[in-house]
Amino acid sequence: MTKFSGHESFACRYAWLPKAYRELTADPDAFAEEDRAMVRLGVGKNMVRSIRFWVEVMGVAVPTAGRSFELTPFGRAVLAEDGFDPYLEDARTLWLLHWNISTYKDPLFAWQFLLFSWPFGELTRSEALAALRREAQRLNAIHSDVTLGIHLDVFLHTYIPPRTTKVTAEQSLDSPLAELELLHQVGERRADGSGRREPSYAFRRESKPEVTKAVFEYCLDDYWRRHKKSDATITFRDAAMAPFSVGQVFKLPEDDVRSRLDAYVLTDSAAPFRYQPSAVQGLIFRRDHGVHDFLAAVYAQEADCA
Image (cartoon, rainbow, N blue to C red):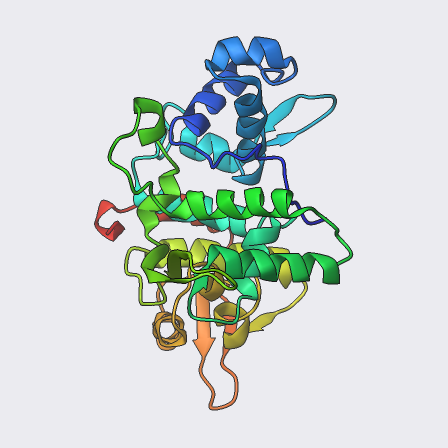
C-alpha cells in the first residue's frame, strides 16, 4: 500500500534517529503514549508521530503488537552505542538510509514516482505536484492538493538544504540526506499559468564514488532478496534501470553500473557476485561463499568511504 502521509509534514532531522534508537532500546513502548513521548523526546505531538514514522520507514525499528516497536538488525548494527555509526556521521550510513526510504515495503508515493517514473531531466514544484495529482488519480487514490503538496514538500526538504542562513539551532539540524546532494537546484523558471518564478531541480545523475563498492553490493543484495528472491540470476537491466534498483535509487548512470559490474567478470576473489557481460543482456550471479555480512562490509574499511 502506497503511503501519502504519516510524516506530519516534517522531513527527518539529524537528531531524531539516534534519539529514538536510545529511547526504544530502553523501552519498546516509548511511542505508545504520545504525551510521555513528547517529554522524553523533547518535541511536540506532531513531531513524535513524525519520528515514529521515520524510524519505521528508515529501517530502524518495526511496529509490533499494540504500539510497541522492535529494533531491526540494521538499526541495532548501525545505531547502537558501539554500532557502526551511532550519530550519523558517516556518509555511507546516509546512502543506506536513502536506500531504505526509497525501497520501503509500502512505497512512499513521492519517492516512488519521482525516483522511478519522472520522465524529465528537471522538475519544479508545480510541475511535480501536477504530475503527482494525475498519478494519484490514475491509482484511484484521491487526495487533496494540500495533502499532495505537503507530501511533495517533505520529499524536497529531505534532499534540499534550507537556502536561508538565518536558522535556529533545531532547524539547522535539517534532514541528514541533504548532504548526499542527490537533488539540487539548477535554476529557475516561470510556473505554468502565472508569472511567478520558482526553483527548478534536477537529480545528480553522475558517477558517485561515494556510493562505495560495499554500499553498492549491500543494496544489490537487498534488491535481489526482496524483488528477485526466486531467481538464480538477475540482469544488468534489473540492477541499473528497474524500479527500486540500485541504479535508479542512487541515480547512477548506466555506464557507472556497468563498470561496477565489470569488476566481477574475471575476479576469483571472495567477491559475492559474478558478472557475465553480453551484447544483449548481462547476467549477475551469486557466488557461493556461504553467509556474507553485507552490512558489516560497508563499514569494514575506512578507506572505502569517500
